[in-house]
Image 1 (cartoon, rainbow, N blue to C red):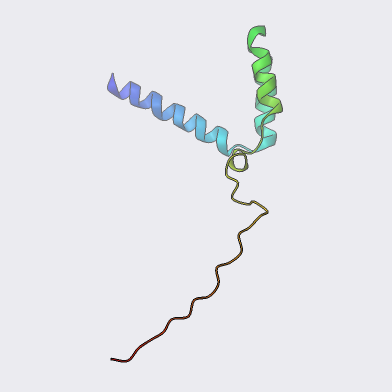
Image 2 (tube, rainbow, N blue to C red):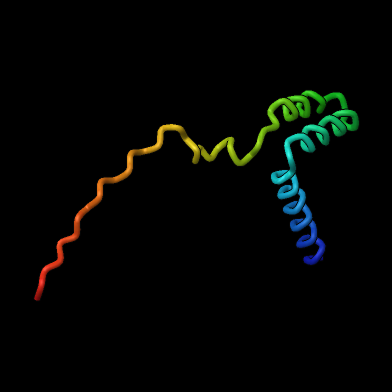
Amino acid sequence: MQSLIAYFIVAIALLYAGWLFMPLVMRRWLIARLITLVPASQRARFARLQSGAETVGCSTCKGCATDAPSPAPDKTIQLHRR
């Protein structure tokens, strides 16, 4: 039983990783195909997901911000003889 739970967790992790690294075009195509399969009550959720599908890496990182901090000034090191 524990093996089945572990397999299930690994399968969910693989699906999530596949979703994250999937190209944007393929993600939108997959969502468009899934919209036809889900019940009408869930279609609005999938449509919202399709319109908001963007690259995950750039949505929260802010690592490439345009306001880069100025470089720190060079500090001189003084060496003293003993």
